[in-house]
Structure formats: structure tokens, C-alpha cells
View 1 (spheres, rainbow, N blue to C red):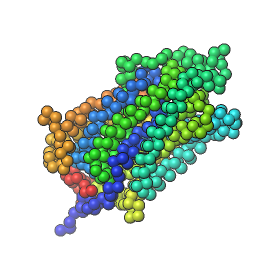
View 2: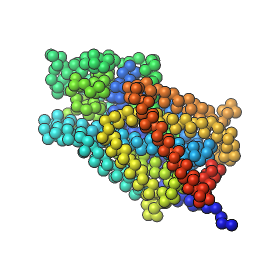
View 3: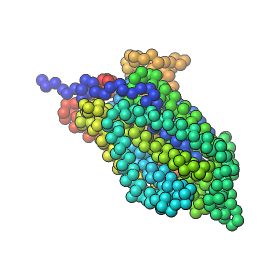
View 4: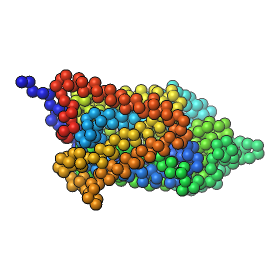
Length: 541
């Protein structure tokens, strides 16, 4: 009688433990993007005009900590490539595990597409505009206008996506070094930015802004922006109250910044001293992100002036001509009103691009591991589980991620509604998937008592008042995930368009995963491979 093919492609993954705890932390923080704070200064007042933007990161942290704790504990209990794919496959079913992880992977890739236009439109274009204003050189301002076009925007995004893919495919050590050293550099740039803003102060910002743009009806440009924002958009005159329903709803936007905290879970099998590294990267990384972003945010917010930030953000989002600064008024672009030092202005603008580029390195590294895990379990062709003998990386899997990211970049570049895609499709879809991961965490100690009891690490079996800690964190994460999806229905970025985004964006993502799994199940069954066996044992390291 012919022997049935083995469950897994081979007896070992072929991936080695090359990633340190600091590099895992760098992956998480790069996925979150420390210097995205430059655009966060605009987003909260623009989309939640009555919310207090200063407490958004804190609310986001309080909401994300249970989810980060859940992911860290699962990563310790089952430290395997693929993260939540492995957990939900083993606790619930192989089909559920694949569909959820497939959706999370596609959603994360959509974020690469959504933010890729920012390279040209929100970093390089503002940089040359600023240089043109500082040097009175029309060449720079014309170049800024050119870079804002869809053609240059797409090709710059495509080149960067391919280049970061080559970094990830070329060497795990190189990818780890890039995210580690960029994290350090990002903190240093953040400190320099705050020093410049604090030394210049709000009065210098107002003076330089009024000197740059002509008055409106005898009123200084700065004061005119404030007045126009309040009359045209209803922007808040000052700092909005902390305790309000709007501020609580803005916590959903605060959570957006933390997406990336869970990336180390996907390469847990490659991490040295995994237990300590996962806690440091996922829980510690979330805390570090909150502290750094909150401090930089506060400095920029008061450095521009609360009423001004609220107003110019509102004018930007409605496309009002009363906003004299072209494009999005990022804190990095507005740095010309605190300093006329061209080197510093270039540094801050390029730092925003650097945040995007290194995020691509982090995401492509992480998401290729998910494709590798599906292939290793035979859900998709085994070619994607191959590890290059020279680079020791899953080159085929990385190549697929790059291609899909390029498709998303093309769609985002030529679709003016990519902001709504980023927030409603990416964030809401991610937390819809988290609901299933949270349910798996709740039932894990009971449904898979064998795996829970035999976990090699005692911390993964910790109990509080007799209830497994992972069950408690899963329950909290379940409630939080439902809240986030609900909160995203309310703001301007979702609102009336959320139903269409849900119908045409989020639901199809899950449906595609279901179709792929059904087809794979049928094909493997014909090859006498039972994919149900996936849920019975943990894959080898």
C-alpha cells in the first residue's frame, strides 16, 4: 500500500535563528513607523476635529496592550514561522487559520500600496517645495509639482518596493540591521526635530508663516488660516477636551499607528531567546512607540499652535484654497517655518520617506514568512517554502509579496480615495481578523488542552485566579477588536463610505482566502494529503 505524503514539506523549515531581540524590536517599531508622527499631527484634527489628539496614542496603547500581550503569549507557546496562522490552524481549524492569516497578509500588503504614494507626494515633493521657498529657486518648486504627479509617484514607489524586496531576499542579517539602525536613527532625528521646534517656538513659526504668505484682507496668513478653518470646517479653537466621545472614538485612529506590533510573531522561529524577544518587541515596542510619538506630537502641536493645526488640517481634508501650503501640511514639511537651515529641512522631509522605506523592509520580511508557512503546510505549492541555499531566505515567497505590493501601489496611486482604503479597509479588516485570533486565544487552553499543558514555557501557561492568562487577554482582545471596527464607522475617513469599503474591500479579501483554501483542500485530497492533519500537530522548526 502506497504511503500517504507527509503533512509538511520537510522535517525542518530550513530557516535559522538569526534575529536578535533588538532586531525583532526594530521590525515591530519599523512596522509601526515612529516618524509617521509627522502626519499624525494632521490626521487626528482632520478626521476627528472635536477629539483631543494628544491622548490618542495613550488610548491606542491601552487598547492595544491586551492584543499585544495575547500575541506575545501565543508566540511563546507556539514559536513558529507564520504566527497566528499556526495558532488558529491548531486551535480552531486549518481552514480558519489560513483564511485569517491570508486576510491579514493581504491587508498589510494593501498598506504598502496605500502609503507608497506618500514617498513622492508627501516627502520628496514637500522637500523640494520647501527648498524652493528657502532658496527662491523656481526649479525646485517646479520639480515639487512634477513629483506630485501620478506618473513619478508610481515609479518612485515601484523602485522602492523592488529595492526593499531585494534587501529582504538578499540577507536576513541585512534586513535585521536595516530596521535596527533605522530605529535608532529615527529616535535621534525625532530628538533633533524637537530641539529645533522648542528652540524656535510658536512665535517664530507664526512670524515665518506670515512672512512667507501674503495677508488675506489685511489679516496675517497664519491668523487667516485659523479663521478659515473654523468657519469652513468647524475646527476646534484650542485644545479639544480629553473626556469626550470624539476623543474615545479617535482611539481607533490611535490604534492605526500600532499596527505592526505583531510582526515579530510571524518569524518567531527565527528569533534568538524568543520569550524575552517577543515581550520586548511586541509589548515593549508598543510602549516605546507611545512615548516617542506622544512627546514629538505634543512638541509639534504646540509648536504650530493648537488652533492653527486644527484649522490647517481641516482645510487640507476638504481641499480648501484658504490653505496656502500646497498638499498635506505635515510637520516635516512645515519645518521651514521653524528653521531656514536647508540641511535640517531636508533631513526632516527625507526622514518621513525613510520611515516608509524601512516599513516596507519590515513588512516584506514578515509577510513572506506567512506565505512560506502556508506552503510548508502544503496549502499552496511547496515551491514557496524553498529556502535559497546562499541567502538562507525564502526568495520565492518574497518575490510574490513584492508583486502583490506593486499591484496595490498601482491601484493606490491612480485612485484618489486611498486614504479611506488605508483606514477602513486596512485597520477595520485587520481587527476583524483579530476577532478570530482572540477567539482562538480564549478557547486554546480548553480546546487544545494537550498543546497548552505540554507547552515548553511555563509563562505561556500562567493563570490568574485559576483562569489562563491567554484566555483573559483573548477575551479583552475580542471586545477591543469589535470596538475598533465599530469606531471606524463613525469618522470622516469611514462614515458613509464604510459600507462600500466593507462590501467591496474587506469581505472579498476573506472570500478570496476561503476560495483558495477550498481549491487547495480539493487538490491535496486528490493527492492523498489531508490538510486537516495540519491542526493536529505543530510544524517543526
